[in-house]
Image (cartoon, rainbow, N blue to C red; front, side, top):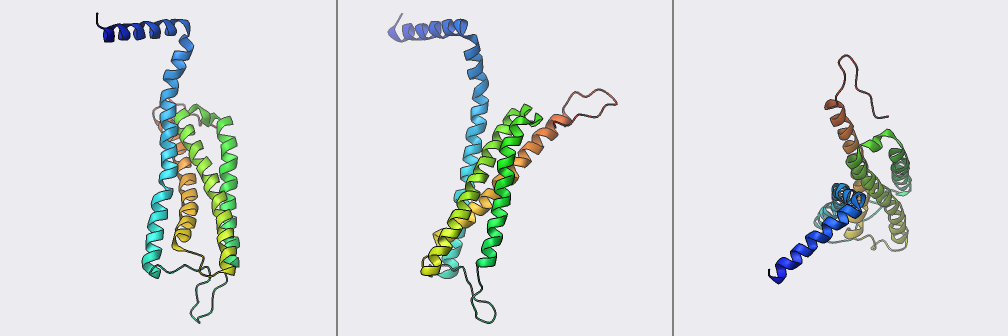
Length: 205
C-alpha cells in the first residue's frame, strides 16, 4: 500500500468514526450546505445590483454633461434654478418608508409561518437587510452631497450622481425581489401541496 492510499484510508476511517460519534453534527452540516448556498447567492444578488446601476448612470451622466459636475438645482424653462428642498424631503420620505417596511419585515418573517419556507426566507431576509442598508446610505449621502453642493456647486461629480441612483434603485430592487421570492415560494408550495379533495389549501399565515 502506497503512502497516498494509506492517507486516504486513514481519512475515510476518521470520517466514519466521527459520523458514528457525532451523527447530528454530520447531518446538520449536510443540511446547512444548501442554506449557505442560498445566503451566498442572496449576497451576490444584493451586491451585484449596485455596481451595474452605479456604472451605467455614472457613464450616462459623463456623456450627457461631457464630464462636468452634475447639479441639484437644474434651470427651469425661465432659466431660474429649481429648488431642491422639496424634492429632498420627498426622496427622504420614500427611503424612510421603504426602510421601515424592510425593518419590520426582518422581524415579522422569521416569527411567522413563512419561516417554513427556509430557502425563500433566507434569500428574502438577506435582500431586506440590503434594502435597509442601501436606504440608510441613500438618505445619509443624499443629505451630505447636497450640503457640500450648497458650499461648492462643482462638488456633485458624476460618480456621486451614479452612487445615489444605485443606492436608491438598489434598495427598491432588493425590497421588491425579496417579496417576489417569498410570494413565489408560497405559490409553489400551494400549487404542489398535497391537499385533500374539496378542501382549499391553507395559507402560511
